[in-house]
Amino acid sequence: MVTGQRRTFSVPVLRRVLLHVKGEILWHEPLAPHTSLQVGGIADVLVIPADVEDVIRVVRSARMSHVPLMVLGGTNVIIRDKGIRGIVMQLKYLTNIQEEASQLVYAQAGVRLPRLMQFAFGRKLSGMEWAAGIPGTVGGGVVMNAGTRLGEMQDVLHAVDFVTIHGKRKRVDASTLSFLYRKTRLPQGIVVGAWIQLRSAAKDTIQSATKHYLQYRKTTQPLTLPNAGSVFKNPTGDSAGRLIEAAGLKGMRIGDAEVSMKHANFIVNRGGATAEQVLTLVRTVRDQVARKFGVRLQLEWKVVGEK
Ligand code: EPU
Figure 1 (cartoon, rainbow, N blue to C red):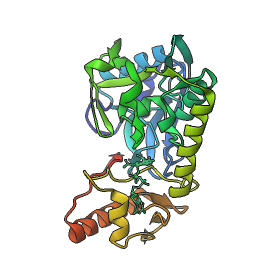
Figure 2 (cartoon, rainbow, N blue to C red):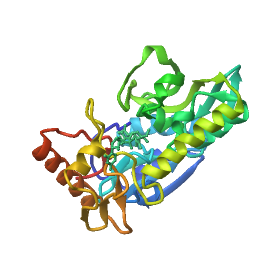
Figure 3 (cartoon, helix red, strand yellow):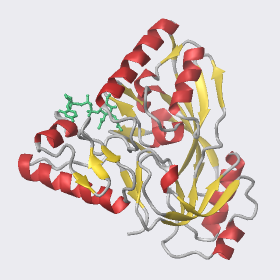
């Protein structure tokens, strides 16, 4: 979520907005270490709310002071080198998870998908196996309708625990939402949790499916190097990875940003890549694929921050 207009905010102004926050407040925080690709500049301030009440406090107070507020997921996002003005919020302390009713799991936005999977497995609940190896969080997964060829968030999402831009908490039923390819159409606001509808299954069945998907990802994707997941969406009836490889772009490098040799629809950070290098590589790949095959690839990543 982004509210307010872009301008520079002095520390005293931001300090006033954040006066009653119980969680962590990190001034001029480099954001690269908070993202999976490890590129990007600094946030004026990074806030890590202690609980949902803290989130509401920040939302209301930022809105009253016209300070922009953005929630950072971190695994599917590229932050530009000039960083982000205003308040960046990370929900990593929202980690409650419980089986609220039979086969209905409530998980807060900061719960990582692998933990949700582990939780479900422990209770013999199936439905999240498609997420094997996805490093993101429940919140990020809901916002982007995370998924693979095997399934997606839409398949299991029952309802969303939501804070509106006015700082009101509400439950939004999944049946009232529309889901697109890697995007959920949500009202403006912040996802603070989700109810996930699973179903009973034998532990062996869940485990073998999970292992199979995880193995497939390990074999085909560069999971050991910093990356932000698939760069482009798959065009209808084709795959971005196949097109990029066929264009001869595997291994192409700008600075420390490299089109992965293992999977062409991944860009990996070879150590010191900048956002500028990554985004130049993205443009180059898109232009060359368009020139060779007449297909304009659409970015799956979200790019944020000052230009
Ligand atoms: N391919 C190539 N060259 C490559 C990579 C792939 O020719 O360098 C070909 C493969 O041989 C295959 C086809 O492209 O025939 C599809 O490749 P793959 O099975 O690896 O799946 P993908 O479509 O590239 C999707 C998701 C991934 C998810 C995998 C596995 C998208 C954009 N990506 O990848 O999701 O892990 O399926 O289920 O839908 C993500 O979204 O961040 C992500 C990693």
